[in-house]
Image (cartoon, rainbow, N blue to C red; front, side):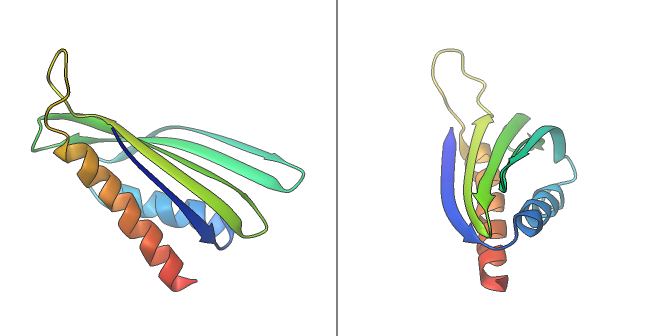
Length: 114
């Protein structure tokens, strides 16, 4: 498992749309598996689970993205999982790190644009 957390200062809708497109455009096998969105008293939260095939590992990986915020103040949390073929311990975590790096690059680009 690999994890990334960050703080964004931009429109919630813009951040959600930008990161979504960045992840989907990163790989022909990347897709949105499921999502949940919530809003109350000006606070918004969206959780999305993406999946893609790892050519190097020969398996599928998931990335869970959560955005939580209000008024341009957004917390981002992302966690990857999967990609190992071992039974009792984890080997070959390259795919997880590579999938998370896609999100990190997208978040950095979003921060530079705002």
